[in-house]
Amino acid sequence: MNVTQLSLFLENKPGRLQSALKVLSDNKINIMTLTIAEVSDFGIVRLVVNKPDEAVKALRAQSFTCSTTEVLAIEIEDVPGALARALDIFGTHKLNIEYMYAFTEKRNDKAVMIFRFDDIEAAKKALADEGYQIVKKIDIIGE
Image (cartoon, rainbow, N blue to C red; front, side, top):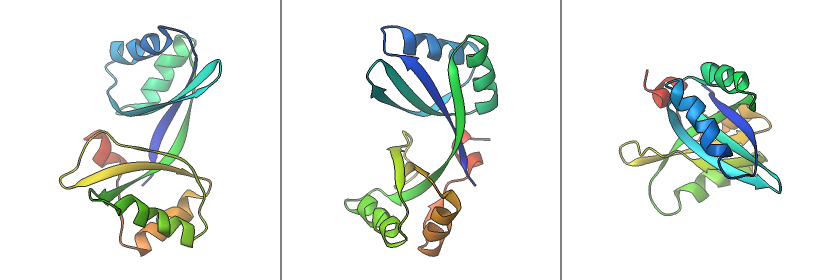
């Protein structure tokens, strides 16, 4: 199952991130993981939250620009070389990673990585064929 990720576009100014996160807090939306990429005057904040539809609605109501994207979350061993072995699969199957980041929660002895692909179904099949556990949305948001 895919995971819904929010992409939030913010001016690169002090307080903008705090304002956006306050909107989520005020609406009792929990952030599971977050990454920020800077593009000169703007930043792109990518988040996985427990209530993505409500988050989009609340942010847009406060005039924030945001969208949703389906991403893939997989479990990998939390040992040296494990991420490199997962990336080998993508290379073998000629799957291009647009971006990736780590999930903040450790799951037993495994780490969770978030990946965005141009062909998410091909990536899922490649990983399943290699025995990787794809994290379900329900596993991440704790429902």
